[in-house]
Length: 459
Picture 1 (cartoon, rainbow, N blue to C red):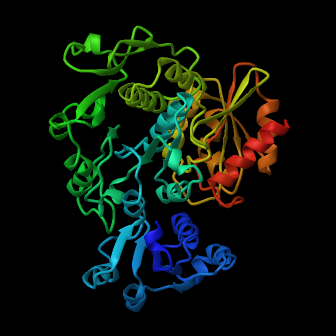
Picture 2: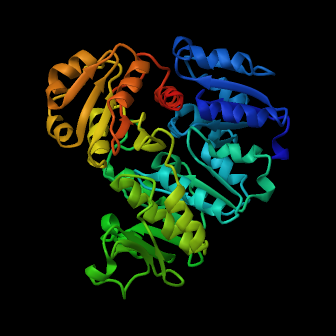
Picture 3: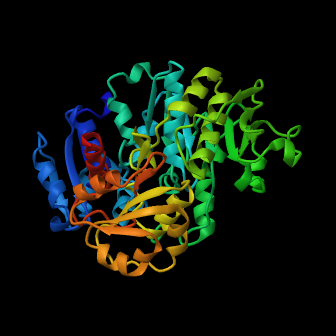
């Protein structure tokens, strides 16, 4: 990183990743300028925060000026910025160093990288792998997200002692990354989708999702979801050491002699990687089919890395989940509390309820964005014993789904948590799952989830 000391740096995008980059380059006395296409009134909070940074970077907001790009020695842009932006293309033509934030971090990372790829479940799997490695006395950095950008590794106080860097990698990040070569790639799924301005066809999206495979070798590991990707010929025909995982039994499917990996058989998790291991699941803390599938991916990855069975078993029993994503909070008086504040759509709420065993007390509601609430009566009737509605959307929600179960409307978020606990019985599960945007009262879902947990501990 010393080679960047004193250089002119242009950071494109003023989000969390942008601030991580500012913090990084300030430590090397760089001359920093920030540009963002959004107008200043859309970046009010970010600009206020930026003005507190010393020295304060120069700002160009509401436009991307070509001269800013040509005056810089190094340009680093966030994953939300299109790598084919005309100003970035012009900078490349003029010999400037141009990186995505992820590519810059990878270029300057000298530690073994474990990449969690695909479309869904990346964050949970990456954190599960990191959690288990730490239980096995390894030093680990987990990142690649807006919450913990990969570039934060470069200023980690103990980065010289890190054993593994675990990153989640989206197709957007891979779009501008050709030399990415992790020691392990994990693929839980690959969806067929398009992304406006980036991937016009599902084929482009899938091609970028699989880009990691171009550089993978026989010394590397590949972990794949058998239930969803066993028919993918590209994944099946790589040079890597390939391990599969499944929620079903390899024995019952008749493939136990053909593949190595991890599967669920006879009420236990079994793995035949390197040697046979069995893991108990009766004390598993996380809930939900998707989370259990993610756990199988993490176990498979850790078995390939020769992590101890004891560390893997402890992960099964103690991993709490990702903050605000069906996260176990605490058990009080026989009642379990979960935080699912990130579920801000009714489709997310349905998926959450499908993963819960009744009886459930549901705290839901938030900003009224005119969502459709029809079609959710059945899942609420099946799973929810009592529903507490709160926020701007509560009246509309009550009109459409209020008769699906016993329902209460409350005036404040504090009251919703208190009422839910007062109405609970031993064996109930209380979960915050807004199904709506959280910005009617809170800054974002993270603030809502954190406040929810604070109220729980005050009960």
